[in-house]
Length: 474
Image (tube, rainbow, N blue to C red; front, side):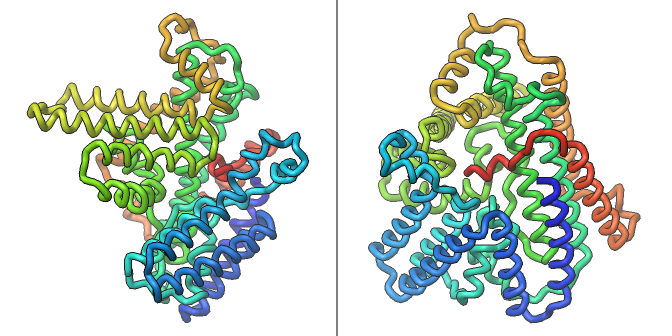
């Protein structure tokens, strides 16, 4: 993994140098498309064939839909995309229960193309936008680049063509601000992923979150500490990757949508989903919830639409019972929050202030962390056993993990909330402490820090078991 990062760092550097020398937007598109396909082929060469087939199918379907914008044609395109996604992502898991029957045994060995969930949703948003008569007219080259764009092809953020197309068509000269900002985001992302790996593996083998979820004797305190630890492991891993993707795109002059915005400072479930995995959350809102909710005017239907949307959110990750439960759980949280808001308005109750706001944060934080049990547990039996332990007073006995685990989780929480408080107070872009340094020199310092972090990552973890980015499995 680390050696791959070193190769990719050099490759990105070379691609940047080439792109900065090319002034023609079309030539830049060709350069980015070729480099994106080469990057994706580095994961598995046959994945590129699936991506190209999906690209050609959706481009042709979108062209036909632009000429004949009918609901039947739209849903035909949606169905084809879902069949492609389901064939690779869901059929192997469903077939596992029938593996003893020879016709189904082969299906369990189907490999899932990395990122298929992300670029399939990008294709679906294109079809929906065309049907809604948005003014988007990409060429095949531009649409291919949109689907295969290197920084986002593996794990997002999920982009929309109306946001990316103008950037593809713009010939941007090299700007030191892009270089500085991109390098800053990349080294920050690598650092966050190092924190995530420490949380998952622990300071010593068998002391991290991953080993904890394999334990068979967990008390209530253990379960809560595991749920909180995994919540931060997932955040640092996924937000760190998003920082890297956004930073790499910025090196080439592209601005991608943000994916995280201090999610664990949320004071309600609704606010949390405007701060966590924002590109997917807003996709579900715009293309699933709003069309459903506006189909009828009754309150019960809007609440049911919330529940359906969150179940789809869970199924997007995996077609397993634990993810259906996780999605339904968050749907119920959102409905309960909506009912609470209606009750407040009805009785004129003010839930802000020095007491209610911290309490709202605490309840939200614990409710979100409790949900991570279902997200991380290997099966529903394990998830329900852990849930019972967390909610049963009789299961609360002294914690059983090694002291190192509590130190790592405690230090991570303290660091997260301290940095979040400073960022909320000073602003995400505040760099006044470095303002006296010329931006060109700052960019060089960021580049040096980036390569040092990659080297440290390689040295620190080369002797431990391989670590994969968590969201690659989705």
